[in-house]
Image (cartoon, rainbow, N blue to C red; front, side):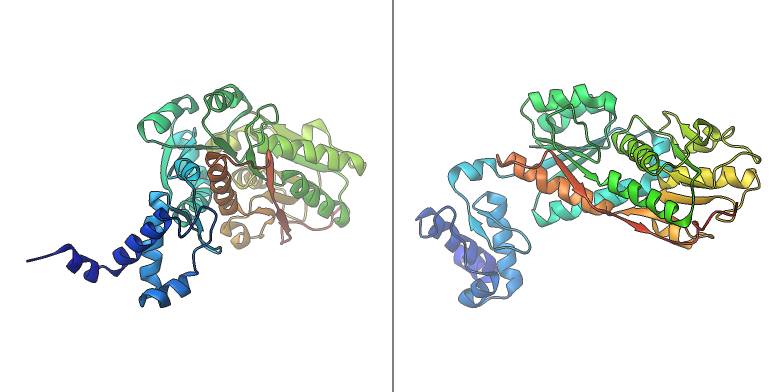
Length: 362
């Protein structure tokens, strides 16, 4: 006759699981105590490290312990078990054209989100929909917290409503200062400052700027930083060298640039707000018969692999997009557990100098 004990022998991780559950229930391991290391547990139970990992993963799923890569495993108390994060939602409102033409950004962001969810053993629900549909993720999917991707300033009232309903929410990226909601964003100010400083050191004094989505927080921050950085250096910024519009469809960027600049009057350098816009900038300069960098130097924000393969290769302000997504889930998990996180969490950027910038030729 088949007995449960046979299953225990066939599945060693169940023996470890049952034993540790019993010891925690009997308070042999108390809330806040650290369990032995995985290596020690494997030796103690005479099993492979992978077997221990499987048992601890199940204990974490049940809410007995807090376990993650790179740190010791801690026993949770009853209150902590109730607040343990098991499910999160990710909500964004991009048009089909946006996702088709600028989906690389989302892919990188979602990679970081998935890595964090895998590490913390969280179920994650992705949804592309208007932000007011957030209740479906919470009530139908059981999401305990929400990561809202790249909100617009106009979304502030909806986000405040989520917060007022008691649902933990984190913005990524995008800082909405007027809301109490924490956000994860790249260091847009320092990144833009480094771009302007680089152009200044090359000898540029006439610089243009392209930002076609100025109502998106990240892009507005880059515009503000650009004006501050050029202003304090006495660099000329003529209105006709600026191109600002509310356009979130990358397919229409080139259309918006059709009347920007002329072959007779143009800056010696341009800072562009993101990579898709930069492609439109390069197209417009080509239409005008202007060469990069001989006539106009170009700096882009964002540094996808394509940027280094283009000719000329693009000088870029690089941001670690997967890190934004990973950090958003870390913060969301802390909020669900009742912890505190910074209101604004900045991820550093780095200027990567390549062929698209050179000293001015006039």
